Length: 200
Ligand SMILES: C[S@@+](CC[C@H](N)C(=O)[O-])C[C@H]1O[C@@H](n2cnc3c(N)ncnc32)[C@H](O)[C@@H]1O
Image (tube, rainbow, N blue to C red; front, side, top):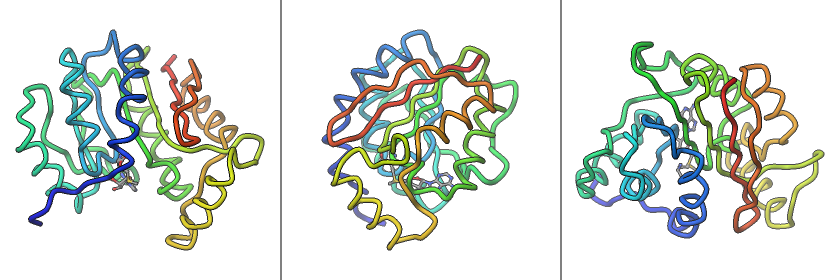
């Protein structure tokens, strides 16, 4: 891989997300990011939230691109990626306290089983009173929140029939099952949301 992975949407949404996580993670110290992707978010958030250790992670195929961006960024509180597929054993030790988890644009890419595994892992590894922030599009009462999200969902399913914009009610049920409660559901630009939950 010679070119850095790049996502225009990360450039567009990084400031609105930073504004919310700055408050949500104000008392946190160790964030695990799931599905780091291009690592644009990681590099930006770690720079502006220097009190946090920002641990990147993704599936094996993404690690090289993440390492390239991190090597260019030179940010001391940003950690090299760990290979983390939510459906496999998470490579974390119980002695390492993770008091915050961040993920963006992942739950609509993952299959239902993967989303269930995501919450199961969070139930296991996020410390009590820990913070969880999830960015992406969601449906409410089984309805799309915009025409563009409806079109996006069709595109997602054509690409991979297991992907879909998730219903917020299902996310809430999974969260409850794993001892998480909703703190806030922030509207974001381009019909996205930032869900803020805390571990009981
Ligand atoms: C659309 S990209 C989002 C990347 C980045 N967070 C962003 O906002 O641009 C979806 C991400 O979800 C990750 N992902 C999909 N399935 C996963 C799984 N089973 N375990 C962990 N990550 C997964 C992909 O590897 C990819 O990094």
